[in-house]
Length: 120
Image (cartoon, rainbow, N blue to C red; front, side, top):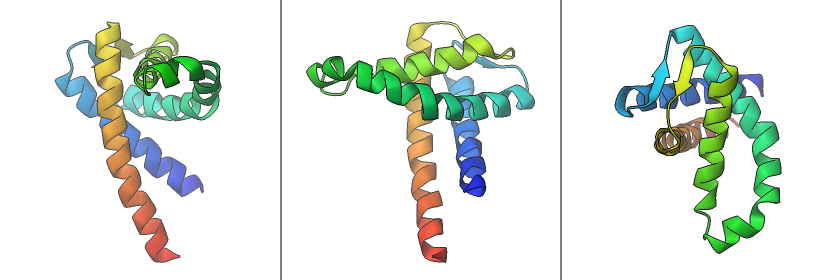
């Protein structure tokens, strides 16, 4: 279980690194802040994001799920608020960055889950 969390944090770190390279408005100061941002993003997504999803369920249903982009962007900005060395300069950068991180995490989760299933 700890190994899966570490692997998912590394995949999230890769997503954050890709986002910082290709999206103007997302900056990562160092490798340490990148890894810390990935771990903090995992913690925020595990505890705060589900609460926000439940509270904003009507908006999510009305927008056919597009409001989840706003929630994901908010989680990215929340991490940037608490962590020095990781900056998100605009809401658009946060939305685009959350899309990049989500796609990379989705691909990484596919490989992590398939490797876990093969060992079981």
